[in-house]
Image (cartoon, rainbow, N blue to C red):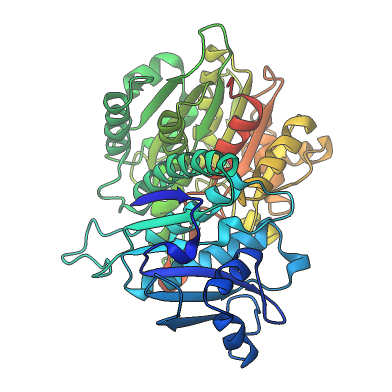
Length: 499
């Protein structure tokens, strides 16, 4: 899809649809008022009739507006002007993206990016507009015999802004959004693919494809024989019950000099999770193809970094395996020796993700990272605590936690910090091994992070994102969200981009 920027008078531009914002009490936005002057007050007259008050998520489509070259004018309610902040702006753009998709117009001109938004510059406004449009355009049709795309899709969106300086910022915002969308779409595609297609081997193939596509991405894949030599007893135990061999995938993006320490992102890659011997209930088990959402987000992040040519060094580490019941599968009560040398008593084989992650975190030491962040659809307790709106964030470094939360706010991909106090570590005691890998029902998200923290003591900056509630949506419209790619990319831009 084509995105462009213009500073020309919107009334003089041809377009299938011209989008104008209206605030509550029938007040046109400033740019809308300027357009209305070209109509000799026609728009104000329409509003005076009471057909649109300006409430959020309301709209009015007008035809044959005098003085306007656009075929149609779409008036969109923006709510109260005093409450028109970043989140309100994002919601309005998402709403408009849906309206434009249903309008059958192939091109549109939106004046929403010209509206001043508290704390949001022209670049961010353009970025949000494009992100909302790209999110709406996403479809997963790989396995449909007939695609479900609209017959007359929107193919060009022009963003109006008010000055040359703002135009340059908007163009930069568009480039950012397109790079992010490329990463988010990849993450969603990988997670939406069924487990009979998206196996650990498939993920390895996709990583090699990124290596071929981008000059600054280099991929290596470790096989189970390599893991045996490294002593990855925890990860191999999870994989033992499956006919699909495990893979440890490393994607290195080199955007800065070799002397700059990388940021390492470790994504849980359980391509299907039956629960193993501690088998899950049948209801909604089909959704366990999404248990590699953390891995998918790491793939998406690497692609977004490469598309944007970010000036940072980033390592994406994906431990990929299936968790299946089999005569060779690991069992509750087994004691595993991890790559770190620590021993772990297995309590529930359905808590397999942390066993992949613990060996991957130990492996990550070889990269001498500046920061390490793991991402996982790890605990149902996370959904109980936070629902589906925020990812859970836990960290041994409060500065890192604040930075990640701020990045999530700016990217509208929010996370919320939970405590990681020493008192919770007591729940991992074991009479037979160094510690158990499950701490019981209370504070399940926190004790899972406590377990991982025992493999991160050599890292000054470690963070953990539990995305069990945010990686996919449920119900009739279920599908992968691509979260937390926006949060992670924003964090890199805020704190590691050398530009």
